[in-house]
Image 1: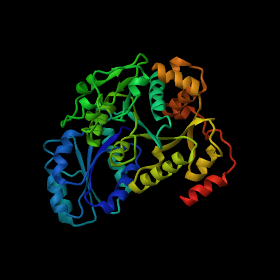
Image 2: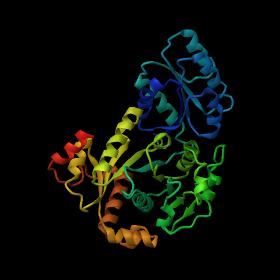
Image 3: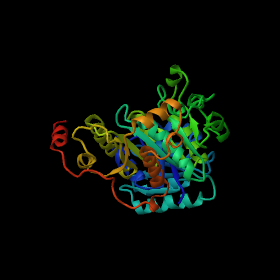
Image 4: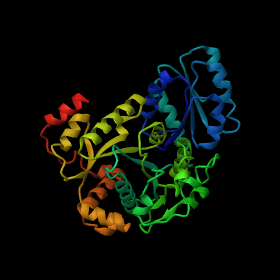
Length: 397
C-alpha cells in the first residue's frame, strides 16, 4: 500500500496529541505539514505535496470549513478529511457540499479512518510513488550520528535498486559531504529560499553523486545561510526527495525541537543514536517522553547503541533496555582506527575496510531496514546483568 501524505490543520492545542497519535498509528501515513492558522491553508497546500488535508473543525467550524472548501477547485487531487465533535446534520451536509470527502466525529473511529486512508493509498498506487525516510537523531553531541547516517546511506545504495540520498540537516557544522570527500556547488540553502512547490528538476541540480552511487544534499556553505532555513522549507525539500528516491537518509535533526517534529513526522524509521553513557541515555529518555506526549508512533523510533566496546564504565545494553523499557534495535562496535582513517580520508567504511566489524554492523543494519523479513528476530547481544548504579542515577533525575 502506498504512502499517504497528510497536511494537518488543528487550532485546538488540547487535541493535538490525541489527533497526531491517531494519524501516526497508521504505518503508511506521513504528516508533511502542520498549521493552526486557517489563512495559511492555501499557501501550504500550494507548497507541500500531499494527498490528504486533515482538518480539525473545532472550536470554530463555521470559520474553518469555508477556507478548506475553497482549496478544492485549485487542488482537485487533494482529499479533505474533517473531524468535529458536532453531529449536527446541517454541518455535515455543508461539509459534503463543499467537497469534504470524509466527515469524522469524535472519538474518531480508527477502522473507518483506516478504510478511508486505504482508498486514497490504492488510488495513488499507479501515480506518484514515495520512498522511505530514515532519520538519524543523535541523543548527545559526538555520538557518531553523521558517520552512521553517511555509511548507512552508502550501504543501502549497494543493496537496493533505487536511488538513495543522504541529507545533512546540521546546517552549521554538518560533515556529510566531507565524509565522502565531496565539494558540492549547491546546498540545501539553495532550496530553502523557494516559497513554491519544489520541482524534481530543481532539487536534482543541488545533489552531488558519490562514486558509490549515493547522492548527497549538503549543508549550507556559509553560516549566514543557515539562519534562513526553516523546518517548513526542509519538509518541502524532503517531500520532493521522497518522490525521487527509494531511501532518504537524514543526518539530523541535530536537536529535538519544534523543527525536528516537523521532519520526524515524515520518517518511516527514526534511529535514536546513543553511546553507553548517562547523558546520552538520559537524553534518549527525554526524547522518547517528548515523542509520546506529542503523539508520535513509538514503533517508528528505534534505539541504536554506537561505539560498543569502548570503556563505558558500568553501563551495558541491558541497562539501556531496562531504563528505557524497550529493546535496543541495533549496536555498532567501536573501531577508532578504521573509522578515524575513513573520516580523515573522506572514504566510506566499505572502501576503507570492508571486512571491519563496524562496517559489517552498519551493513547488517541496512539489511534489517531494507529487508527485515530476511533477518532472524532477536535483540543484539548484551550482558543481562542489571545495574543498580544506573537505576539510582535515573531515579534521582
